[in-house]
Image (cartoon, rainbow, N blue to C red):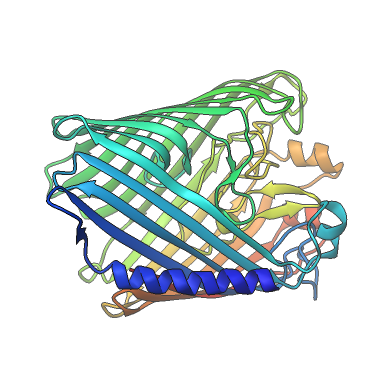
Length: 463
């Protein structure tokens, strides 16, 4: 408990310093400027019946058990020349967690006590950027990079180099990352020395006349090379992401094709030929000058219909952090565990039987999900969001092989309602409830049919 208190005190001290310094950039001398940014999020959350059993709040083999308190923060310092020809940035991430503890976790994982306390400090950014001419720059070091509009394939902070340029109105990015960090518990960078390399090339292409049609399209190519343990993965991702307005409709869409080879997968370790795809579409109509926004969404990741052959057809990302359908969508937000293993990673909509720090697994059941949403802006400072929809497995062959039980294809229904209140220019309160009503697949996997519930309230401060 002392460790958690120390982290909380450090958060407070750093935030006070950041608040005092971050109002405006500081002129260091005739050539150099500096600025400080600080943000902190404190959240209280309750999880109930996550194993779909009546009266249970236990989540075996995982942190964040039942009711818990969590705090995270980031302090960044950026120094740059007045003409922005050179920039240097460093950011420290901080994290603290206190929950009710978990006996299963304490017995299974060496060194993790059942008291449930956890804390972490990490370097989230540490880079230097040099201008190479107007609109062109190169950035080296630990940096955040999101390769599309929804974080579907790669959205992470890692060591790497990014070369950015422009060709007219088109932006061009070429990036390499050595993915040597794990983010499983705190979502902060934790060193693992893993031999995993990622290459990304994309374009940022504006489309339309700026009035009836105003879109940005990001065609991209990713290549992932992973040599973790017995794993040998060489997979490419070719696709496109698009977002913007089309004749009064607000749209976001993405499609990716994954291809390559995988050996040492979690379900079938034999050499596999990867052939998989992923699609996301969300279309809405802003009404009443944008104050009311109904929208419909569809998400699909292909699944494997024969886990024992040599073709892996289940889509898996490199490192996805998906932003869609409310901040607390049950499937996307939560890590859904299956005994000591993982069925779905947190912040991911994929059922891949792997966690953040584990190799890709393209022998998986895939997912099909639908969503109907309604976002309402009641005032300039208060917004609510409602989302509901079912989820299915395209193929149930993989979980049937793993569990030895027959099951259908309907996983269940996800529902979430949340609200955002801008209390002050730098202070935001976010709260919401989410539920998941299990159907055939979830009932068969977890041997329960009780609705899982989640309630969360958080305060975000950013300066």
